[in-house]
Amino acid sequence: ETGVTQSPTHLIKTRGQQVTLRCSSQSGHNTVSWYQQALGQGPQFIFQYYREEENGRGNFPPRFSGLQFPNYSSELNVNALELDDSALYLCASSLDPLSTDTQYFGPGTRLTVL
Amino acid sequence: RKEVEQDPGPFNVPEGATVAFNCTYSNSASQSFFWYRQDCRKEPKLLMSVYSSGNEDGRFTAQLNRASQYISLLIRDSKLSDSATYLCVVNTLLSGGYNKLIFGAGTRLAVHP
Image (tube, rainbow over all chains, first blue to last red; front, side, top):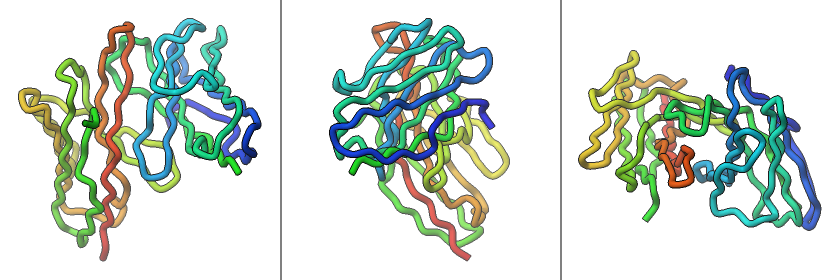
């Protein structure tokens, strides 16, 4: 096990609603990255948080936002949900933003938007 | 062009077969390279890192060719338990001063008796 936890495991929402997903990073890791994995695709980078600030962002609209807390845990918020937001959402922790080591993934949250 | 491209698959092989996965990446500044394994509806798990000198872990051998920006994974003596999706992953340092993982779409492997 990686020591990265996520909640909830599964979630069902309807279009237009808002959702918050949570992640606790591995002990000693101060950087958290979030990924979206649609069915049949590889994970896509959403953004990264370091020292409670967004450190980098992929091609996702502003309705995808996040937070990082002093204990390095993190939240992903998605507003105005769309059907295409249905996916597995993964968080991954790493030692720091410049680490060339791998990132360690949590078990994911499976979001279904109806 | 995708940043990381893999064989589309799926690969259907009998137990005991040798199977090779190929992957190419487009950013020559990429710093580190990995193969992840992902079981159905689970999170990706690190299978092995990939080095230019080549590295082996039991039945698995990975190779990196930086000049041709090519990564490979060889699985010998396939087992039923090797059935999964294999993701080629590249860690790239971006101009904003952070690394991000870039994933291929994955190649599905099905090993049958």
